[in-house]
Amino acid sequence: MKYGLISDIHGNVEALRAVLSDIKRHRVDSIHCLGDVVGYGADPTACLKLVLENCDTKLLGNHEYAALGLQSCDNFNDAAKTSTEWTQQTLDDDWIAVMSDFAVDRPMDDMYLVHASPFEPSEWHYILSATDAINAFEHLKQRIGFFGHSHIPTILREKPEGLPSIQTGHDFTADPEGRYLVNVGSVGQPRDNDPRASYVVFDSEELDIEFHRVEYDIEAAQHKMSEANLPSTLISRLSAGI
Amino acid sequence: MPEITVKYEDKVIERIVTEKKRISIGRGNDNDIVLENRGVSRRHAMIEFNDNAAVLIDNESLNGTFVNSRKVSEEVLRDQDVITIGKYALVYNTETTHEGADGANFDGTMVLNTKQQKKMLENDKIERQIVEKYGGSVLLGMENADFAEHRLDRDVSTIGKAKFVHVRAKGFWLSGIQAKIVIEGQVFSIYNLGKQGKLKVNGEPTTQCVLKNGDLISVGKSTFKFVESKS
Image (tube, rainbow over all chains, first blue to last red):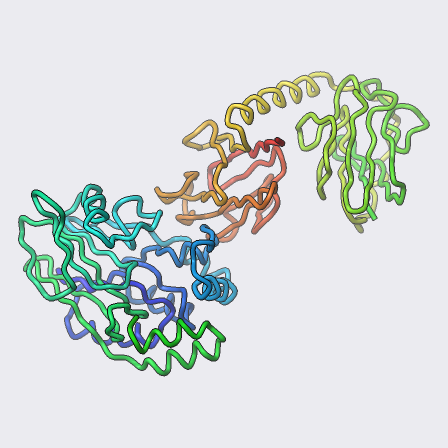
């Protein structure tokens, strides 16, 4: 089976449309969204609609959790807080109800999908260091876990001894005996100094994992955010990919 | 202006709108609200109005005064609070309602139902012990619940059918996260998040409301009772 894996769309419908169009080239069997469809960007409703229409898996991210009012925004920076409040005001009750049905994770045979970490999925722990990765691997029951959250395409491989290896996302074929955690990057707000939208295609028979980048109309997305009076730092970061 | 609706067995027998700073409640004829019943003390309780607050004070009555099924000695009243004295229910409204009075006749000769009184006192005692044990407000599992008691110790508690929610509920077509209970200061509020009509409080479909002690929360086929701690 061939799976398309997308995450962290963040209300950027221009980036999402570009990714959904590009992903068709790979003739994937299904597309799976790992959460954070909303937050930051100007088109949360349009993004939710496209995700519902195109994705088999719809996972909760911390920004859905915040939009549902299930966690305090106290730990968010000012820009994130402002955009969360804007998103809450923008989404009507029908879309709140749609998000309330998203799952927090999804095991699929030898694959596991989650927004942040297999360790306490609804606590939104980041996997940024080898120590974080050890904890995450301890809670991963499958061979390969796909996640998002940090917006940085990354490959983590468990080592029989010592710390897991951490590599920047690149195309590779997984070792059938190995265990991996793969960050698929962000569709709508990449933070690895490459502003292009990111997604992954996974071939579960060949164990091929491909990282893809897609150009999209960043200026159009920025213009809408500006029209919506969203914070300028969130607007400018899109063209820098930070 | 504040309004007190006096009910007997769900029938409105009196509706009092007052500008007074203090109203008295009791069996004696000199009270502002006269409840003619042997189970009611001569000077049973009073309500004092201070600026925006109304405070109910029990005058060490023999059978006790209850607010939302909890025995109280002194209690700040909230809108729609139900004060129980004997078999009378006095509903406190912060503003005058526009409903017409039933005008039911009540001859004041009914005898206090002591079984009901005893049961209410027993339940009150048990529930006080539970909130004391947990040191805070709790949900009691009444129907189709996978717990007997659940401490509401988070700022936000989720209720639904998903495995990751704090309070699991059963039922078809329930949303993963059907509802949330939010603590704001000392006040607990419940909000529906999922499909409409799946959250009910005291049998009424609800989108959001402030919870009161004794409220029955139904989510799908599961029912929970809210027991509030007044620390």
